[in-house]
View 1 (tube, one colour):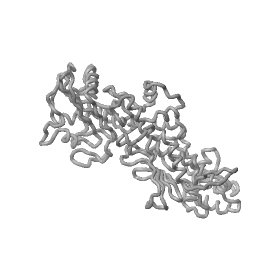
View 2: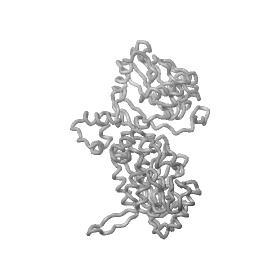
View 3: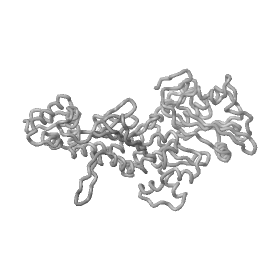
View 4: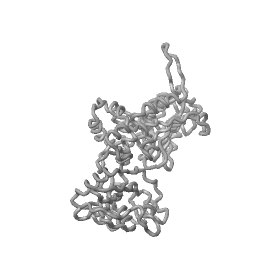
Length: 506
């Protein structure tokens, strides 16, 4: 569990990225009337006639947020001006934001005592001349919401301390560990036309290989079916994080989610001191993927040989390797890491593609591991659109593309909050570092193994583009990899000419 960092109960965890929700009076009336149709209070809805007490409200917000996460609700609600038992709209004379608590206005007082992952918005309006107030409470994200360092949960219409219900606590933690960034709301309070306008629907239908419907209802139907938009409790529409990340016309329209836009940078030298080009990709990953590839190929070093009377552009990096590495960075990033997004950086001698979050598999076993994704729906759609592999063979293709072009092997580096994949431009084998030579030998053994074959002196020479006269130096390289427990012989007793090798884990 995360540690607390101050006396109010705030944790060392990124502040949530949920949007602010605004409602006009018509939305409020539609929402409240819809909630009043419920047969009774639920774990995600509480009605109050007009009771305003700081600790009670803080505990209710906490319990409702945790219950909303547990029950997969997009929001929970605390409503003043409605009779609890009858659900009659009776009105309230109170004012939640400005009610005095210990010399402070209530809204600020409560926010200071909630954990950092808590979020709610306030709206007020009149129904038949009677004032109602509504708190729209976002579900917990990352860990349970706490108030004054205590976690609460709603059991039906009752708010209790979480510690009293070990089974519910375990279920909630399971939900939060597996919680989906994609289904959360990036922008709310939209009409169908406004939701459509925010997204590049033409790209969506092109990638789906479907004709663009002639009417708005048809478009919304498909977008909703794929989880890109959703209808909210107040009758309006919201664009989900999935919809924004994949198909936003401008990711900047979506608040904190917009900070996940891809950035492509080219530097003048091997350091990051002098930026030559900075090309942020404004739109969604799916709608702008091919554009990102074109920008990358234009900025990457390369040559333009004339073939058959036509000038051809050859870049320093295999297009297949770049596509797979970029798609992996976009799909497998950790969206809960705030303030950072994916980057593609070009240097004269290398390309670095970085994303927030650590890999979910051991990087030493990345070629043969069962694929895992923390963003399943995003990964599924990107596979459907043809941007990444379905069966986890993306890294295999990166390695093979580098082998075919006799390039130094790609490199994965894992940091505290991120991952970086480096592709290297061509260099003579004599200029490779020993670490690169050994990594190339290990990756080659992995590729051969998953293909049902073995690493041999000859196969490694061919991979490295070396002549038969280099057999001795290649044997010494393999021996060094055996010594460093990267590969192992299939039969240690075999003669040198017949020696075969597999990865250390085989």
